[in-house]
Amino acid sequence: MPIRLSLPATLRERLADADRPLIGLWACAGSPITAEIVAGSGCDWVLLDAEHSPNGLESVLAQLYAMSAYPVAPLVRPPFGDTVTIKQFLDLGAQNLLIPMVDSAEQAAEIVRAARYPTGEPGAGARGVGSALARSARWNRVEGYLGRAAETISLTVQIESAAAVADVERIAAVPGVDALFVGPSDLAASMGHLGQQSHPEVVAGVLRAIAAGRAAGIPVGVNAFVPADAERYIAAGAAFVAVGADVAILARQTEALVDRFTGGAGEERASY
Image 1 (cartoon, rainbow, N blue to C red):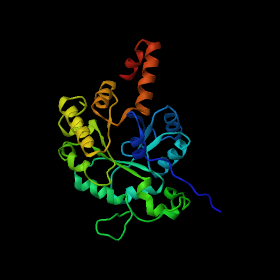
Image 2: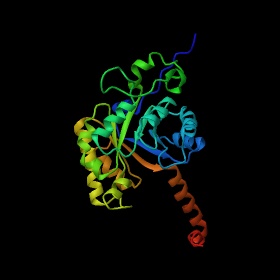
Image 3: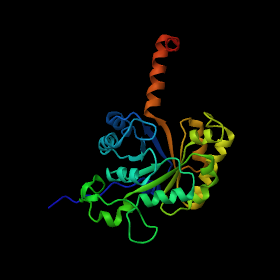
Image 4: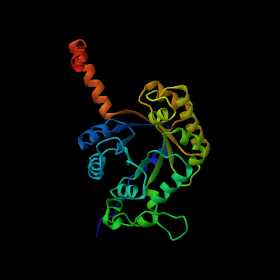
């Protein structure tokens, strides 16, 4: 008899069961070794980024395998939210998707359709059916996967433009959107404040998104690598917060270590 498997809890389920904000880290290096180190840090969730990092389907799959022994929720960000890309990442076993650059409720609704199987009804899902060939259903070892696939997936849409903030209440109300996640870097750029994630207008946009999610009854996360920003958004009701990234931690900590023994000579060398 074949083994029958149960899939891990989704990020949606973990957020619903949490009694505190869930703390996450980014894994951007494209390395299973680095992803495993990050997963073992004690954080609650790890973002595997395929939008701004050297990640494709194969490297994301390898990192999902590397992280599978740890009690963290892997959150995978595809490069964009089209139907084909979403299908591919879901089929390789990414249960929790973060879709970047979602600017409207209409776009969010199409993303929900892309993540769900068709039912024959108008407006139903558009996900291609390949579960027998895919890790998502563990090659049909997850009993009844097709009928309850939506239960095994969490879908988070990223609010990271002035247009998205303007429509955030409608986006939060789209059925099938499980969470919002605010990206202050792109939000700042869209507002004319490139590189100023703590600008008052950007902070106001983040707080509006948090309030919209809370009003709609869905959790809101935010990217906040500055501790003061993370604390501000947690106090405002953010349910999950990314507080650092593997490559940034490596860069800053190696610089600090070298500077300790060179008296800052590393800065002089870097300018040559």
